[in-house]
Amino acid sequence: MKKIILLLTICLFFSDTYSQDVMQSSYKKFDIGVGMFTDIWMDTPKDMNARIINQGTSIYGMYNHKFGKSNISFAFGIGFGFHNLYSNTIIQDIKADSIAFVKIGDTIDYKKSKISLAYLDVPFEIRFKSRKGFRMAVGFKVGYLIDSKAKYKGERLTNDGVKVKEKIQGIKHLEAFRYGPTIRFGYKWFNVTGYFSLSKIFEKDKGPELYPISVGIAIIPYY
Image 1 (tube, rainbow, N blue to C red):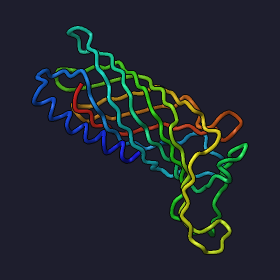
Image 2 (image 1 turned 45 degrees about the horizontal axis):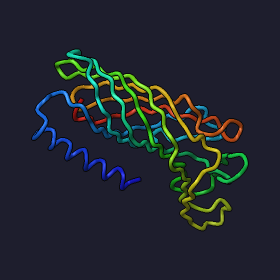
Image 3 (image 1 turned 45 degrees about the vertical axis):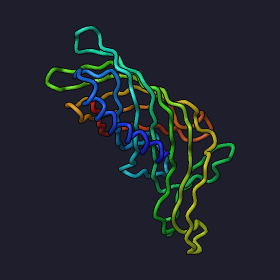
């Protein structure tokens, strides 16, 4: 996934160069955005204390269709979203018939415990752009789960003092699709973003009813 982010970031750079040299219009039909956000996790299990900052990243390309000479346009595209949940818990067995998070003991010395989720997203937006550079967009996105993993770094839960570093792929009973409304507003390249997940992370009755609210910033050179 890191290679995908690097590749699309390079595309962002060359998009800037190409637009300056070839495209003379101030209103571009295609744009690439890169975002950083934190997830606020809702409906966490009783013993779970999620970290305040759960950093994530997103990158996407969108085609922008302007309605005549108005300041309003419709955009759609494709992208990737990478989410993390850091907490004081660990999944007991990621392949179990029902996913349960277990609190890490207070006497256990650990550095990190998290789950990571990656989605292929299809976003849609209605956009407004003023002549002075103010921008606003409201939309909706649907995502498909393409990767999941659990990571732990610290002492083993048996409390024997042995340090371990574990990464396990493929958490069971995750919902294949996610969806929810999006909002963005900003000035020129800089934007504040929000996403509210209407879907839960786990399948019904197969895990906790977790879902994220994502708040962050995005750099979008053109639209």
